[in-house]
Amino acid sequence: MQGEDPFDQGTVSILRQPKAVWATAGASVVAFMGIGLVDPILPSIAKGLEATPSQVSLLFTSYFLITAVAMLVTGFVSSRIGGRKTLLAGLALVVVFAALSGTSSSVAELVGFRAGWGLGNALFVSTALAVIVGAAAGGSSAAILLYESALGLGMACGPLLGALLGDASWRYPFFGTAALMAIGFVCITAFLKEQPRPARKTSLLDPVKALGHGGLASVATSAFFYNYAFFTILAFTPFVLNMSPYKSGAVFFAWGLLLAVFSVLVAPRLQKHFGSLKVVGASLVLLAADLVILGYGNHTTAIVCTIVSGAFIGMNNTVYTELALGVSDAPRPVASAGYNFVRWFAAAAAPFLAPKIEEWSNIHIPFVIAAVAAVIGAIVIWVRRSALTHDAAELEPKHATEDGVTVFAN
Image (cartoon, rainbow, N blue to C red; front, side):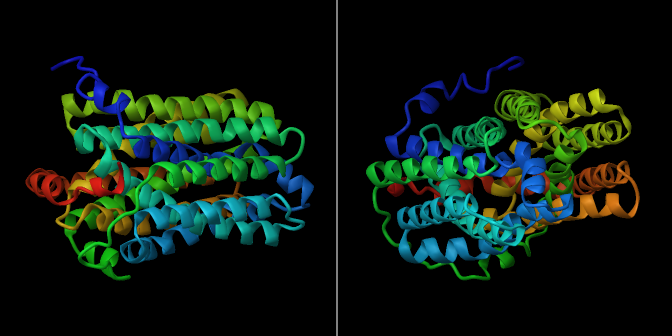
């Protein structure tokens, strides 16, 4: 029905979740805060540690490179020690390495600690998605909305926390994140039941084998190019804007709010009217146009385009998540791991390559290349549209009956 609120059907389910779901979602917010936390303080870190933009951007590269590789490990670990212990292990690693990041005396130390942080985040986030999808009331649609809400809120609040704490010292946001994740550790310990061991253990290669499915491989390939564009904005734009932590935090807070609103409220409406593939295709093209304008506009235009990009990124995040979870016959946790394994490599590459490309050319070209990447992502979706649509529709009943993990939660 036109104008239907995506929360209408799931209002009860989203507001009346088991405590375990809320605890997991709350900790997920903090986990996603860790991604954008460093945005407002990147120039401060560069100044404090006497580093170049490309060196400081390695904070993202090390984080997401380890996250990508760890996607092959998360299912292997959780199927052997259980979902609860995997979540707690991930949280513990984040607490330790976030705190250590705040003590760094060099870029090399900080990059190394961010890598450990990425490992913990990978263990937590991938398992948290499985917990929320399986345990949330209202089915997978409500669960994905809840997960994307956590993502959007975390991406919005991360830069804000980074600005508020980072104005005094670039070290404080890292200590703040460690404290918040410690609270999440306590909540998960209190509200999440121990998980029975699964009948079949996941192997290290299962996520790679899942990518043998043409539909999932297509989604992952498109998401790879999209994530290159996404993380060019997230990791490179702060250097272009060159603002104080407060001002940069305000820009990325507004960006994160748009991301959350379009991810949770706008994307589901547009999907019902036009279908997922048309929405993601159009959003990628609009993101590409936004990137070109950002790259060639003046300072005010760059600020506006940075904020507006949150709308397109929010819509893309929701649609890509749904496609990845529903397009193949692999269990959702395995499909998610394979999909994330591919796309996080782009998140690792963009923060390092964008400053290097600027050094080799000029400040405009990194955004042009990111725009081209977004267009390539749209082309992949368009070329593979038939397989993506049919596969997802046929496999949804199978996932609905086979992928429940309600034993995770009380």
